[in-house]
Length: 74
Image 1 (cartoon, rainbow, N blue to C red):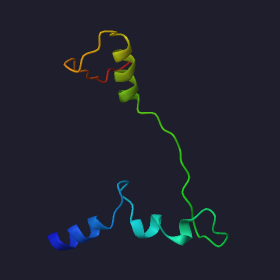
Image 2: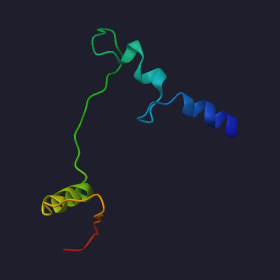
Image 3: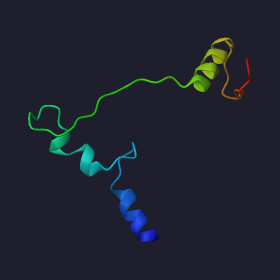
Image 4: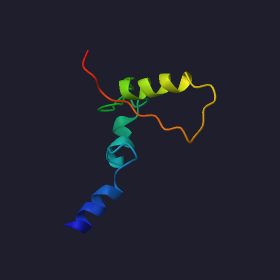
């Protein structure tokens, strides 16, 4: 089973999708006979946003300063 998993994972792109599909002529947006295509959507990670905003408040930023966020009820 481990060998089968490694073989499967070897066929995945960095995005976790099968390269056979993402690189297929069927996914080419210029192909008038294509079966599908990929479109991009942007989503915001509010945890990362909170960290980013906090870092802006520290002008003397240092890699030694570690930030973390906690979820609080409002």
